Length: 481
Image (cartoon, rainbow, N blue to C red; front, top):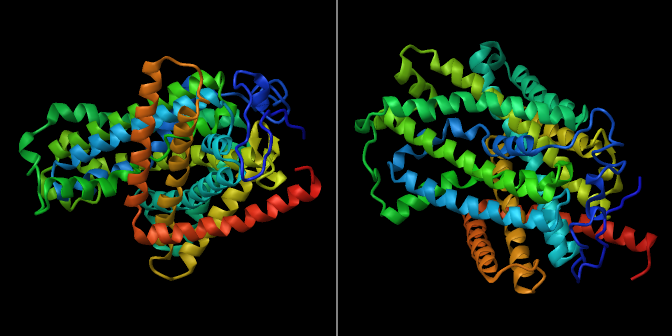
């Protein structure tokens, strides 16, 4: 397989020079080369338009956590809505930064591409490696969580440990098979899953406002903490609700007109997810009494029951949660292969990760689903309480590393004069958004917790060995400095 990508591989001490992003050679795999989407990608490969890219962002941000979030933050009172608003502003700032970076570097790989262009191979590898860890561990976590909702619909699944394990594996492999079938099917599954998951959420978020009872809201501040302390504490729970804003940027090579559509999908998708989050949480607060919500195991089910009566809300929400998680797994499986693909094209990951079939990096998809499956089986067989939860917690740190490095890359481009020629007003706006997004990323890192940061750093250091071996291999095959 040949590559027509323009960036040249440099040493770890200097940035990788990136050609004019408007040149189609910069993203040759976007424009019909045989390793990507286009005329040589086959009938099952299809580049995403804006609607699919938008669904990819919203579908990956809105996973299964939304169905428990109102109950998780209810103990802090309605002040948690303030935390939601603050986090929404930070997430949109991050989305705007990714949009601008995607305009400049419209290539598959997202954060990896931006970081490598700014700071060189080593930083780019860390961004790709940490993001990859996040995807396959998170996929295992999503599958395990989905089994809990499946057990509501099919109680027999929850009766035996191995039936739960097999169900979790099936939930992982079905989206993986959809990915292996080609990007045409990935996009179709993502659109259908996003529509199906949004229907019940919007029913509560919008319809619930007509049944809203202010008496159910409870106290504004339900703890003895100060206002700042309560906002920070509730934000620590909500911090990772917006992971996935980078989804369209990571798959830029599979998006038509990426310089335009990636930015639009990123910003609109993040804003859409934020609207669902805020309205949904507010509606549940007004439909379920505060005392009941604090102890609720299924707040959206309780909200549906409050709106229409009966006890069928649990079944509806369980169906929506399963669809939501399967849709998120479909999107995250694609992303899990895209970053290693971009890094492999530049020689920073094994070349096998750069093999594409039907527009999909098949090795990346297979390796990711095998690793996630192994972690799932380990979760059900190890018998050690808390091991899986610790690993998942580590991903909350590894996910923020590419965010932090990407916002730093944007600041580097702006400060070094490497940004496109823009008006002074736009330059100020871009710099302001980048600073806000950098602060938001730092907040995400701090919110990971000391244990997660400590173990996450160990994961990253393990990757240094991989980078050293790949760098040595490149030097052996190409001794030219």
